Length: 174
Image 1 (cartoon, rainbow, N blue to C red):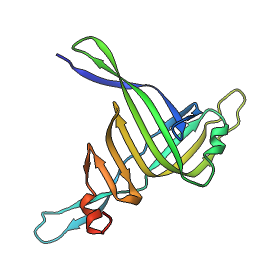
Image 2 (image 1 turned 90 degrees about the vertical axis):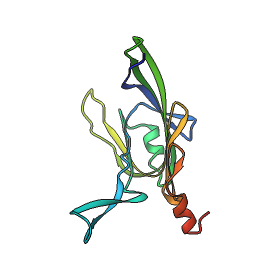
Image 3 (image 1 turned 120 degrees about the horizontal axis):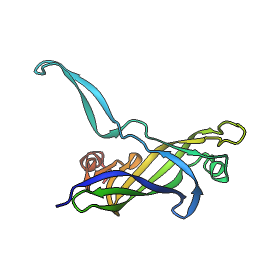
């Protein structure tokens, strides 16, 4: 009997256009926070926040680099950048007493918002930080597409279910 315990990210890499390794960074992935509107009135016992199907607030990705690098400069160009984050995730199978590795791939189309060059302190990293607005994100877990959000093309899929298909159709976009 297996008892899988997800533990941690073993390591990860950042690539530009799926090929060019960008270097050593720490990443803060975005939160998908649905756009909401408060609903209250006759026939409702109180109020609640109603999500807007397939619509999300601003999505942000932050990458913190050890120092100012060529990658930081490259990602400063005011255009959309294709960035791939590949991670190896570690699980522990308590039933078998074994570790398992899973793959995580996060692909984003990102526009730079903030280029924080960091701080200069003797014998320390600069903590240079780049922050991006995301127009597109796709999350694959073990080579299977799990989430896809394309804000400009009305696509929001979770495990293959496209929650905006009917919206696209109603808007004459299909």
